[in-house]
Image (cartoon, rainbow, N blue to C red):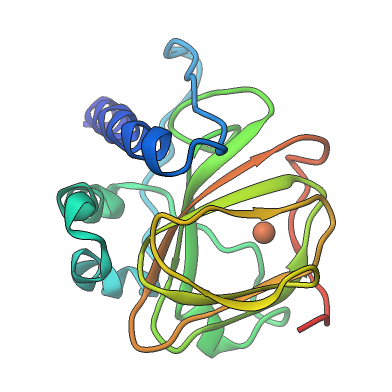
Length: 201
Ligand SMILES: [Fe+2]
């Protein structure tokens, strides 16, 4: 069963890679190492934000709706996580926030020095300003959200645009009526260091 999840994830990532190669060529491609039998597929962990999976396809460009529907079917089998706990973030934010690493030290597929996966935010969600040492690329796949960083300010960014957060820059996001599904790719020094809230936005 868990092997099936790994296979489905590899297949989905390969299809995503084709999309990103055309729409977001500056985002580093994923080259997964051969499956390591010592590397366990994480058990599924579901979060409240997964309630919004059924509405993701409607917010995606028509050419990737099938890809998003396949992800929505795969998502409940993934390990969804939150960087911040109760006491660090308010309950409303935590009910509308989660991420799943697909490639990296905690993901289904192993690639040293990288963390890549999907961020999901529900509607009307403010992800407060935060920072981390890793270089970060985002490519929204569903939903037009408002993105902030201290270099460029607030910008409404539709799906399949590339967002880059250099190491240590403060950044934030805000969703409105529709949820946001965005691919993330971390690399560089501090790839294992967690994000921390700041107060820039
Ligand atoms: Fe970030």
